[in-house]
Image 1 (cartoon, rainbow, N blue to C red):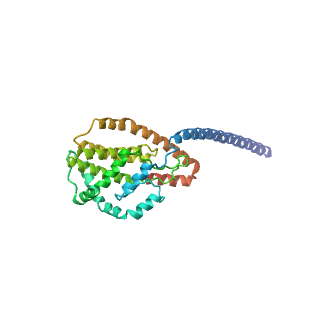
Image 2 (cartoon, one colour; image 1 turned 135 degrees about the vertical axis):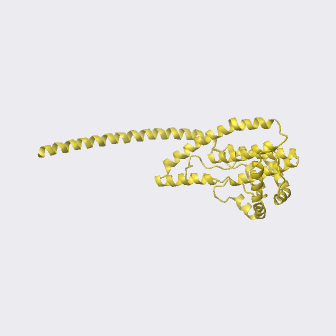
Image 3 (tube, rainbow, N blue to C red; image 1 turned 45 degrees about the vertical axis):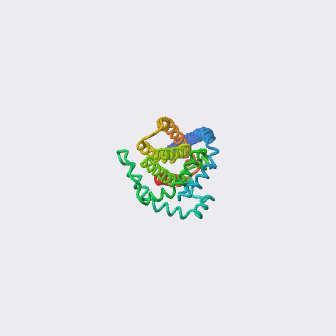
Length: 298
């Protein structure tokens, strides 16, 4: 009886030892494969980030922030840190900001109505909105001249090597708001048959939107599409459009946008990789949910 028990116990120990050896080998192989995959990811990420390594705010974007602040709009792409320009904006342009906020509803309602119209007809501006546009025409033209004559605005971007789902995303809300103001200006100029001013406004709006396409984050592409849809309807309502715009639209839809999205998907994969590598399981889940919820509210 004791011999049978001893034999069974010995077989159990042999089975357990074999299981431990197999598990250890599996873990070692898994770690080796994981290390090889991480090296490949790091090499690919290094090549990818070289293109965006100098993505810092340029003089064009800083000047644009100054000019749009005079309209009561701060378009700085901030991740929540109050910068010097933001402090200047808060101290000097609060009155303009309040004035703009007073016509925000009229701006949104008017633009929505015009963009939803199936015809090319454009209504006159509501009185409050007309007064704001009229009193700020010079400031709007200064912004347009700056965008058209300067290099493409570029805002600072987080280091892609450290980006995870816990990274705070910049808000693009004021970019959309400013583009709405520009498009309302274009519609108003078109309504009054001032085609030269309308085309210049469209030129500025289009060029500013290209700055979002150059960024690697996915949210900037989604915002660029929102703006491009408004631009497309506006273009349809404009009676005179130079032939160059046909090629620009084709370039945007057939090349610029697809290429830009492919870069964003690569960037998304690196963000997921960094999150899995640097965040704990709880941090990963919480940050992932917050990352995607915050996107929906940008």
